[in-house]
Length: 103
Image (tube, rainbow, N blue to C red; front, side, top):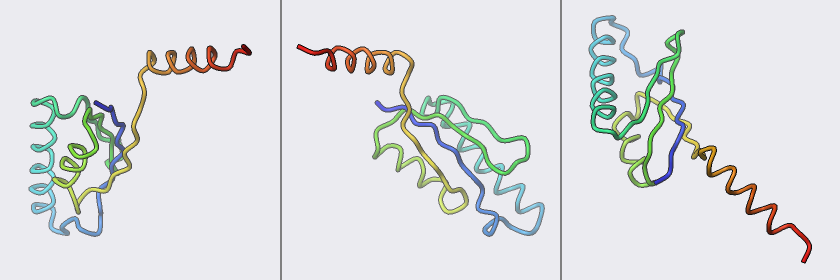
């Protein structure tokens, strides 16, 4: 499976103006995050200290990632990038070095 670093932001235009309603919406979204962490669907999750957004790390295929993102839409927007582990990067560099040697 592919590991993704996902940066997310709240869609402020859809956030309720009433503080009680906003708190209720945010708590319901946080419960989804908690459930995803507990089930292993998310590896990590965090909120920026300025509360403008945050990040999460997910291991999934493209279809599973899309399914997870849909749970949050339209209240949250996402920028998801696949990432490589240090071992994957070292392996790719080693392979490139072998393939680039003159024969």
